[in-house]
Image 1: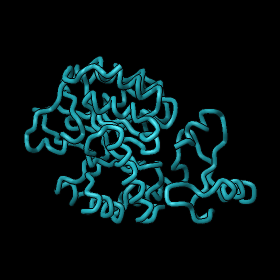
Image 2: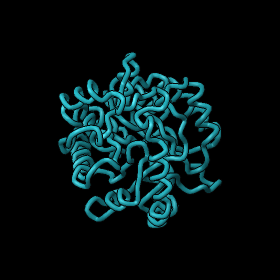
Image 3: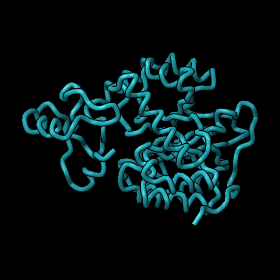
Length: 302
């Protein structure tokens, strides 16, 4: 979760994959001494990250192969109402869901909530557990304003690297942090970091013990790479279709561009006739539940 912030500060950041390190604790990285030793003695084995390619620098081919292997499992779960990349494409109901990943992240999450409140637009926030536990007041504000909170794991790991026990801890602790902050039952919505999935991961996350619904997206403006507010806005307006789920970020670094782009995004989608809804409502859209439009939610708490 911190590589983007460090690269923004001008530091060179290397990723040490599990094969280069000793066993790690249940919910964290290998210890600092092991990381430092790997950097000093085996730097050539580590991967130099790129600000434009992000955390998965050097692993993207592997990532996309795993996604391709998961298509059959994803299709079956979509039919069962447990997996969603977008909602119904009906032209008669132009619903769209804004989603934000990797927060809460003061001050940017608060700024995003301010913009959403001005327009009365709901959104779904996929929260990282370690930050949810650190900023329960921000999650309470989200819930009070009618937004939806989903699980984005405890520390945003590359899930295929984890054991089932580690994965369980990542998910359960995050659900607990969200419930503790809001005082409400969790939504059971889960977005895997990077959208990573394998057939085994899908099985683990949707089995009875976890009972989560997996959420992906079909509109990605790449705001995490900070291409500029205008580029973010235009990418969303160009890619959006009825039922779309828009991927944006309130966490993971400086999100000033996302904040600046948000009013133009909302204005543009409203002008195109879209109604804003929550991701959870897209799961139910086949049952003709009404979508939430602008100016339906209260002002945020002061």
